[in-house]
Amino acid sequence: MKKKLFIIFFSLFVISTLSYFSIGFYLANTILRINPTCGLHEGSLPNTWSTKKDHHEYSILSRSNLRKNFPSEKYHLNNWQEVFFSSREENLKISGWLFNYFPDRPIVIIIHGIFPNGKCKPESNLIASLLIKNKINALTIDLRNYGQSTKISNYENLGLSEYKDVLGAFDFLNTIGFNKNQIGLHGISLGGTSAIFAAKKEPSIKAIWLDSTLAEFKLILKDEIARYGMPHDFGPAVSLAGKILTGIDPTKLSPAFELTETQNYYFTHGDKDLRILTHHFYFIRDFASSNNIKADFWLAENAYHVDAMYKYPEEYSKKMKDFFEAHLGK
Image (cartoon, rainbow, N blue to C red; front, side, top):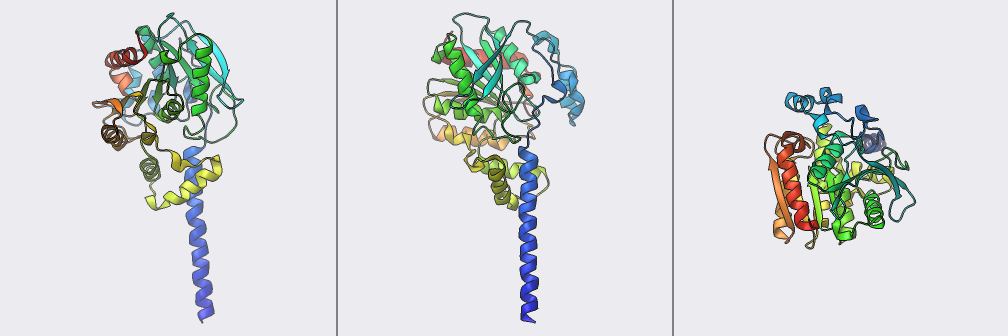
């Protein structure tokens, strides 16, 4: 009888353990697997992109209408140069569009978010246009595994490797004549982690703008698991599976703790963001306040994820101009 009970309980333990880690693997694979295309924006250019192409994919009516009615053509740019350069420390080809309009003026590297994404997405193109409007040059890039850049993995590394691509862009700009203290960063959503990690490695970068970025691993892990309707108890399984799939340790994904006292940051977030919840914004704000981090904060009213640039383009443009000119020079 005891032997039967032992077998039953042992079998249940094995089944439950396998189920636990199988669900963790499924979640990690779903969250991290990359679709390297730009989705419905595949093939879009700085003079052809439009938010109308995928407005119907937004389930919230106000977000859909915001993109449906956004005057994309007003922000088209007709002059750019396709460029390629190497990621720092790795022999990977990184693709970019260079908008080098104004000699002796600063330039900002624009870093896109998670899939489907790339320099062809409206967000990157709109930010480039808003910068050019203010006589600030721009470089949009495809991170590794996206667009025309080298493909080495089917999984997102969450900025923990991609930051080297940003540093490669920084090195490229330096070689073509931009002074190190003239180069700033703009990170969109997950692109913000690449921006923060890159800036930590390159102290000469003095101005980093983060739009809708995440703050800390435990917060985002809990949020992502909840998005799939699962309890946060699956966190360890998802973390382990993520490490196996990507080869990196996702527990190191805490960009808030990588902020420095010698650099300048600007954080913007939508107050209705359902993708990167606002507790990330408040976490960073509190951390910055407690650790002598020089940072400005803008919580955009009635805005969802990465919506502030569409909802308030003129205000967004003015804030970027003031921030980058203050820290990169006029």
